[in-house]
Image (tube, rainbow over all chains, first blue to last red; front, side, top):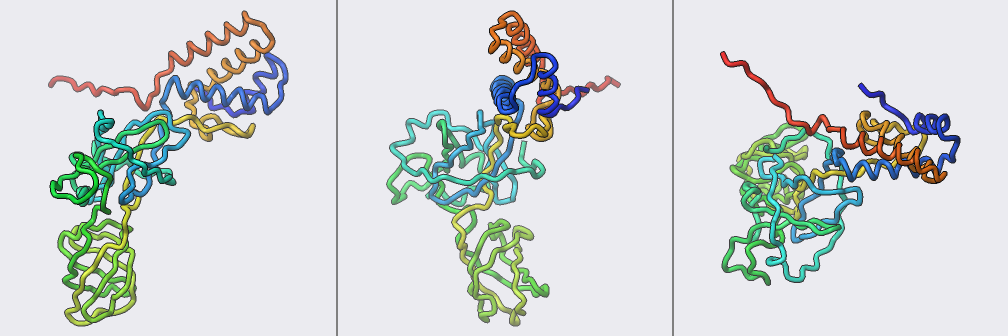
Length: 115
Length: 209
C-alpha cells in the first residue's frame, strides 16, 4: 500500500534531488499538479445539497466542480432519487432570467438514494 | 402548475446546466395554466408538500405534540401554520415527519378534548431538496502540514505522480530538458496506470453448484 505524503514530504524530496526552492513556489507547483491530475483522472467526487426553491430555476455551481455525475431530488418519502438530464433545453428555454445564487452544503450522510 | 410532483421525481423533474449554473425543471401538466409559459417543463412552482391539510387529532407527548393527518405530504423541516379548533396551537411550527399520516412539533400546551385543526404550509422551499454528486477539483494545498490524502483528497497511489510533476516543472525552469522530459513521462505513466479502486467494477464469481 502506498504511503500517504504531506506537502512537507514532497518539499524534502525535492530539496534532496533538485535543490531547495521557496515554500510558496512549491505550494504553487503542487497545486498545479493537483489541478492537472483532477482534470485527467476525475476520481475525486463530492456531494452537496441545497434547498429546492419555489419559483427558482437556476442554481449557481461551485467553482471546484469539474462535471456533474448525478442530480437528485428529495421525494416525499425523504429519499433522494436521481432525475434525468434534459438533452435539448434550447427548445424549451426562452430568455429565462432567474439567476439567484445559492449556498450549497456538504452532504456527508449515508447514501440513501435509489439506484 | 408544476407542483406537488416530488412523489415521482423520475417522471416529473429534469435538469440541464451551463458553465456556471444548473437549472431544475418540473413537468407542467396543467393545460389551462395561466402562467406565461405553456412549455412542457417549467420552473418548480411549489414546495412539494400539500399546501394545506386537516388535522384529525392532537396527541400530547409532554413537550411535543403528535398531529394526525392522513397522507399529509410534509417532510421534516417544513414550516406550517396551524389553526386549531380550541386555539391551543394557533401558531407556526417546524415539523418532524413521523410517518406519512403523522408529524410532530414542539409545544408544551395540552390539546383540548377532541381538538382538531387545519394547517397551511408556510415554507416555500424543500429543505435540502436538491443534491448533486460531481467530479471535483482536489482541495488546494496551503500549508506544508497538509496531507495529500486526508486533507486534499488525493489517493495515496498518486502521491509520487505529484513529485514527478513538480520535478518536471523545476527541471523545465532550469532548462534541463532531458530530465524534465524524463519526469514528465514518469508523471504521465503514473497517471495513466492509476485506476481508482472506488470506481472499479467488481465482479462476484459464484461457483456453479
